[in-house]
Length: 153
Image (cartoon, rainbow, N blue to C red; front, side, top):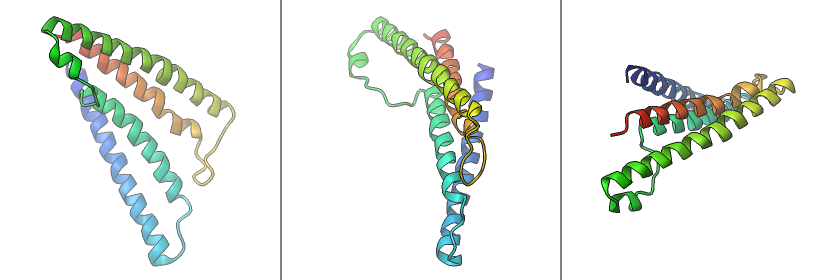
């Protein structure tokens, strides 16, 4: 459980930093556009990439906190044993999705953009870095759900 708390703290702090940089970036964009009169060329692209990282890593963070959107009508009406089984099934389905779509699919996307040497137009950073958020988030979700399964009541 100690490792999970450390990952929670690191991920939470990372999300705070990303959000802070996003706010500063957007404020700079507004300042240069409306006060200076010449909009900054990189701020739109940076805001877009930071939003991708914030959304995808935020999904992993929320998944780890078990605060994600859930339809809980069926589990509320079921008995304790059935609730436990449903939780287990849901956790396994989340793990399968994270492995197939996020880790495998995301890794393939990162690899393809890396091999093709795709660069972002304004920032000139490899797009593979932008897409790296997908498999990273998938690994975090898998870690959280395996931890949840191991600590089920």
